[in-house]
Amino acid sequence: MLKGVKEIRKLWRNLKGAATPATIIMLVIGFFVLAILAPIALDYIANATAANWDPTVVLVFKTLLPIIFVIGVAIKYVPRGK
Image (cartoon, rainbow, N blue to C red; front, side, top):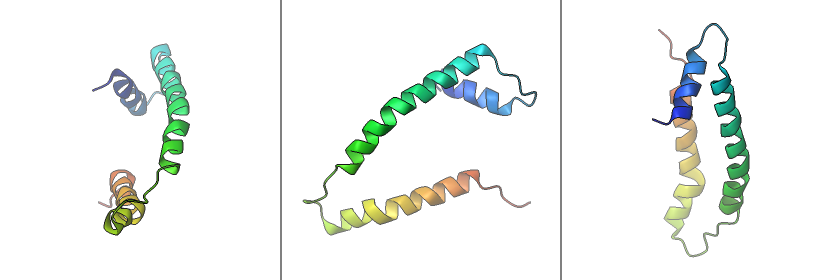
């Protein structure tokens, strides 16, 4: 597993609220990388053309894939009753 992910998990589980300088630096670097790469990825996604795709593939990518993504996020992060 990546070191940055381990630092984020350690920070998330830290109940005292104290963060080490290494954790803060890793988070800042991670946010900078995300801020640089996210607009590039969104630009490529927005400018993608589906002109030569089969209609079934277009249906999957434009409607079903986002729905499945939302369901997956909900399953992961919505707490379950006991």
